[in-house]
Image (cartoon, helix red, strand yellow):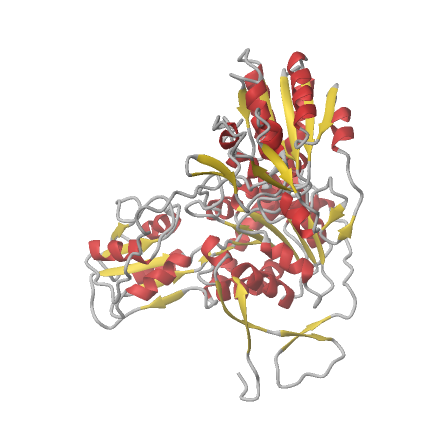
Length: 606
C-alpha cells in the first residue's frame, strides 16, 4: 500500500459487507428470495445509490437463480441470494449450471444457519457445492466475506463457472469495521483515496447463441461434464494462491495439529497456543496434496468445524494420522460452536487454551419468553376461529409468522408444503383438513400444490393468510402487493389466481371481522372439494409505519367474570394482573378481544 493511500472503514453488518463487496466488484444484476439470515444483502443493494444495479425479489429461489443465470449468460456480473433451505428449491438449475458455465461472473450466495436460529434444519451447503462441482468460499469473518465475494467474481470469470459464497448466521449478522473502497465514475481523476471505477451508464449484456453449450440435451451434457471435470485441478491451484487458506507450522515439535474453517476457525485461533500447528481452510475444493504435506507431520489431527464433517472427511483422505472430530465424538455433530465449546474440545485433546471465557447464565426466575405472534397480528384471529369451528380437524401449516401460533398448527415442513401435505392427508383421513399458508409463501410454491389438489379431487380448505408482506424476514414486498423492491408494479390478484387454478369456493374476509369470518368458515366446512379463503388484513407493523390511527380498549372490571376467554386468545396485550385480566400498552386496537368477550366487558375507549 502506498503511503499516501487512505484506508476507509465502515462499521457494517456482515450482509452489508457482502453487498459492499458486490458493489466494489461491479455487480450488474441481483436476485433473491427473502430468508433469514440472507435478506439484508438484497435490501442493501436495493437502497445503494452508488451503482446502477438491477435488483429484484423473485417469487422463489428457483426463479431467482434462473433469472440471474440469464444475466450471467449475457456477460453481466450477477448474484443470486438465498438461505440454505432455499437452495433445495433452486437445486434443479443449480446442479446443471456448472455444465454450461457462465460468461459474466456469477456468485451464488447461500447463507447457512447452524443451531438453527430461524430455519427448519441445519443443512450444510458445502455438500451442494461439492455435488455440483463448483468452488465454495467459506468466510470466517465479515471482512473475509466481503473480500471473498470480490475474488469470487474473478474466479468465476476466469473459469466461466458459478461460485458459491457460504456465510453462516454469525457472519451474516455480526458487525465489525470493514475496509471498503469508494466508487469513482470513469472520467473522474483519482485522488489519494482508493477508488473502484464504475461505468457512467448501466451496462447492457448480450446473449450469444451456442446450442452446444446452452442446450443441455444428453449429447451436449456428456461433453460439458468432461470439460467441467478438467477445470477442477486448475481451480484448486487458483484457490491455493488466495489468502483464505492459512497454514501455520511451528518449530516446536508437537504430536497434534488443528484444522478448521469458517467462523469456527476464529474460535480456534483465539484459543490455541502459538506452538500448536494450525491450518485454516476457507475454500473448496481443498488441495488434498497440500493438506497432506501438513498433516503427515503429526500423529493426531483435530478437525473443528460446524455442521457436517466435510473437512474431516477431506483430512482423512489426506493422511494416515489419527483424525479426531465429529466421527470420533470429539466435536458435536449438530448446532453452533462457540468459544466455550471449542475450549472443552481442546482440553479434551490435550491442548491448553490461552484464555477461558466465563459462561454467562441467565438470572434465575425470569419468565420464559418464547416467540409468539405480535399483538394485533391478523393471523391470530383467523387461526383461533379455525380451531374453534373445525374441532378435531387436521391443521397443516407452512413457513411464516403463523407457525408461531398456538392455534391450528399440526404440521410444518417446508415452503408450500401445507397444501400438498394437507391434500395427501385428505385422501387418507376422513377428518376435516385445513391448510394455512401466507401470501408470499403461496406465491413461492403454494400455487402448484393448489393446482394438484384441484386436479386430484382433494377435500381440503386452504386459508391464505394475506398480511400484504413477507413479514417474518423483514417486510419485503410480495407479488400481490402492487410493489416490488424498485417501486410500483402490477398487483396480482390472489382471488383470480385461485379461481384460475380451479377452486370453485373462493372467498375473501377481513380476519378482524369476527362475525363474517365465522360465517365464511362455517360455510366452507359444509362444502366439499378444494375451498379457498383469503384472510386479508395488513400486518400491524406496516400500519404503524403508515401512521394508521388505532383504537384503544380496556376491560371493565365490573363486567369481567374472569371466564378466561380473552386470555385463551393468546394476545400479548392481554395479561393476568392480580387475578384479573388487563389490557397493557402493547394493544394495537384490533378489537378482536372485544368481539370475543361473551360478557361485553372489553370496550373501546377514546
